[in-house]
Length: 299
Image 1 (cartoon, rainbow, N blue to C red):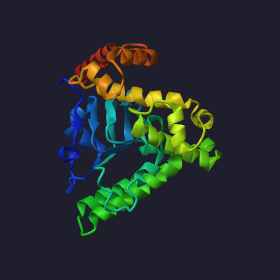
Image 2: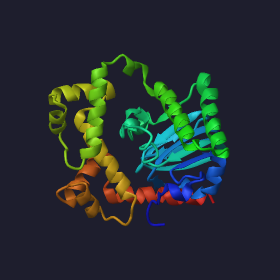
Image 3: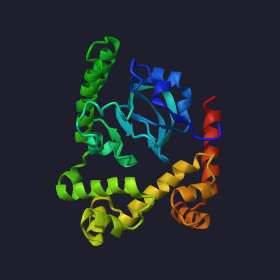
């Protein structure tokens, strides 16, 4: 396969509805073994590991697999697995529309830190005191799935929302709790604006104007809470999208530069090499060299 596949939830669904999949992870992995290799989803995806080891990679960042680790992904992210031993747990996939008819706020899911598309906030270790409660929620979902009733999908939605709220309380770092809630809101709004505008707006002052604060204030918030400047956050998002596009061999480097709104291919190449240390072509070759190695190792 010449490019990273994008999976539709309908092709993976094991639930009566094409908008939701709920399964134990071991049979899911067995039925969809190609998911070990880099791929994208057009749906939300979460996995709770209860057994096993190895690594999983989300948007080119590697994480060690640990029992009672949960991770969340939003549509469009690239990921892959390299497991060791017998891996099990639970998996939930749901379409972007699954909660839309259930919640009045269309942006409700964006309020959870792990659904911001920020990889470092999307992989969470579950403490022992909450492990039984969390697995109980997954078991309740599987039970609802097996005993279909009039309100089965609404029951599933309620259980999933309970899971989100429980995990979200864990994902807020102690240090962040002490920070100004106003600054937390500003940072989240800045990140949302970057997500929507990174191909068009490249300078902190443009975002500061949209947030009605000064560029210096925006930089101070980013440095205090993330240890990064506002400009770095913008560049990192452009860079991430460049990497996601580069794994698709149907797209030329010049086409990617155009899609990301660079003036020309040489400017894009200079930007990418300055941030990553290698050119876009070298990055692309490196990714697919690693992919071939993983494919051979898992035969």
